[in-house]
Image (tube, chains in turn orange, green):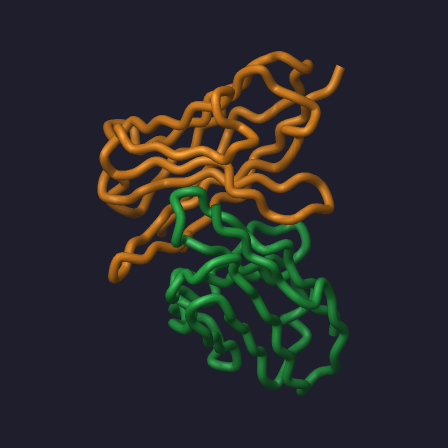
Length: 121
Length: 106
């Protein structure tokens, strides 16, 4: 069964740091791009960051650029999101998703259940 | 960046109805457009990719169309389990974006 399990969420003060992890199973992790998407309570989905199969290629939403870093460890089938300088507005459920490419296009076809990050003093 | 705008933001319909949700991109994105369904308290699920291809396991009453800047998701013969929020998402630009969502109430 293809599965993604996020962990690492919690309560942190403004300005603090957290590292989220997403453990993958049931597919050849090293051959898929991965992405993080977040959702504040009662709000819509916001794409946060993505990482290609080639570790050197990453992208970030403007709202997190310079503060968040995405990385992956193909030996552990895990993708990470290092979040620094956290702000109250970063409070959300964070989902990781597997990205499948097809005919040059891509889509998020498997999602984890999410981990909750709360930034508050 | 490419922005995608959905309409309506919410709708109410009855079992058996046909409903259509539209998504407009801020520039031409060919068919780099996906649709997701999110039920309350759950993670999103992929419904349609590349504008019109139905994801495996998704009922055939869901369909997608469009290209360029205008796209639509249609649900025919609406069922109670279709009560959810639907999002479009563009994969044309490196900075992916989602529409603001359309809440469908049955």
